[in-house]
Image 1 (tube, rainbow, N blue to C red):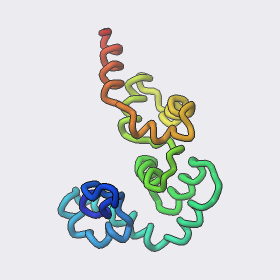
Image 2: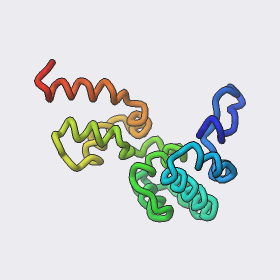
Image 3: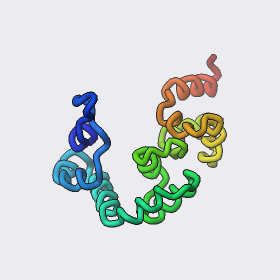
Image 4: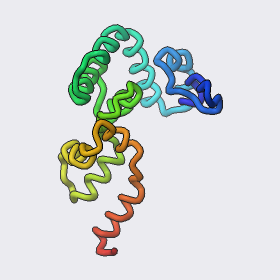
Length: 157
């Protein structure tokens, strides 16, 4: 999606910026071909909401408020779940927002044997890295953590 819709970066035209909502809406037919219909519809719906509420969103993002408070306001305004909000906050450059990603949920569930308070555990894990905690979460090598913890739970070393 980024390579197809996003503008090429001036410093390296082989890489692309995250597409704007308008760029996504211009390629809605391609989205419908490239993604399962439910995901394509969601992407288009979010892009439409961003486009129609751009002034309100810009106003919210200009406010000096904690990342979690901003995410809550945007989630309500855009009717988005926590997994999607991680991407929205990342695209807004809010690297202090610790996302509720699927990998984080799997990691937390595995490490805590079913513990359900995923965000509290994520906060504890990445809070010491603030204001870069959210970015650290996105860049974390979850595959090695999953392997080590799966081995530990299985009685391996």
